[in-house]
Amino acid sequence: MEKNNRREFIKTVGVGAAAVGAGIAASAVPAMAKKEKTFRWKMCTTWPPHFPMLGESADKIAQWVDEMSGGRLKIEVYGGGELVPAMGTFDAVSQGTVEMGHAASYYWAGKVPAAQFFAAVPFGFNAQSINAWILSGGGMELWEEVYSKFNIKPFLAGNTGAQMGGWFNKEINSMEDFKGLKMRIPGLAGKVLAKAGGSAILMAGGDIYTNLERGVIDATEWVGPFHDLKLGFYKAAKYYYYPGWHEFGTAFECMINKDAWNLLPDDLKAIVEAATYKSNIWMLSEFEAKNNAALRELVDVHKVQLKEFPKPVIKEMRKLSQEVLEEQAASDPMFKKVYDAFLAFQKNIYGWNKLSEEPYQELKKL
Ligand code: CA
Image 1: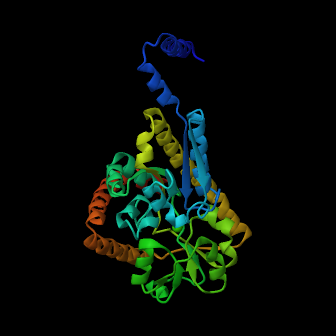
Image 2: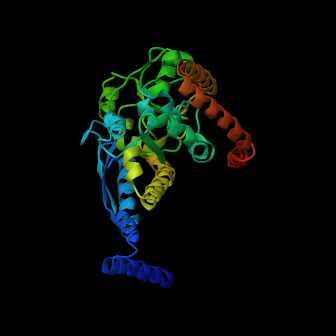
Image 3: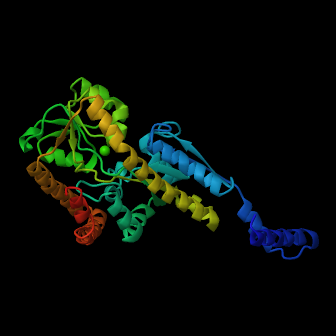
């Protein structure tokens, strides 16, 4: 214990002892009692228990909060289906069945379309830009507004970085090749695929491999090399496409029931917030550090054929993506409000990127 801290500690204990002994400074007692109260929370997640990176990051948030709070806030983490179904996480937090949830906000597209901007939208932000938008560019205020009527307080809690375009059993040489293509690709990206003439097929993560192998689907996207290698998609599909136009930097969320949040003393609130920030940078760093080794294994050991989507295909998919976003904006005022803010920040960040990221990427080609 530092000398100053020890003095503070003795002083604090002294006040407590005096209060107990002489019945004075009574106001100090409830304050201390409140500070020392222990909280027990439950956190539901949309991931299989301890799932690499995603479930792990939920586990780590609980561990860090426990360590930083000296055990005053204990969080029990549940995988999807252990307490409530994975896709019931949002409602469980909203209704206070659990205090906390860990997920990606685009899972709630059916209930809260505007929430998708805080995870990923096609041709949206990369990890650096979504962090800048949400944490420093007004995105968090909008996210809080979108979630407030559900009694949820959101925090950023991780990011995959750029994802891959997916696994295909046929080559994509032109837009024609999307016609009739059956692909597992969720959300707004699925709507873009439908506009291109394909069909987006929804299925649980655990069913993708079998469906791809049996030809029920022709293609699937998942995450990036680190996760895709673990799921063994290279055994069921020939071509691995990039870039992941639909998810350039998917963000994850930690949701907290507002009633539970309001009961926490300020220092525990600060600790929870700090743990989510740590998780946000931890997950992105893990993906960025480990993706290339997994990619090398896929290509060198498993002989996966890497393919880049042709530029005209990407250009057309971008056009279709804008149409999808504009159609959603026309039917949902909150979606439009967030979309307008997203577009304004995109313009802002692209302006700076011209002098920062673009020359940096060009340097690699010298
Ligand atoms: Ca994905």
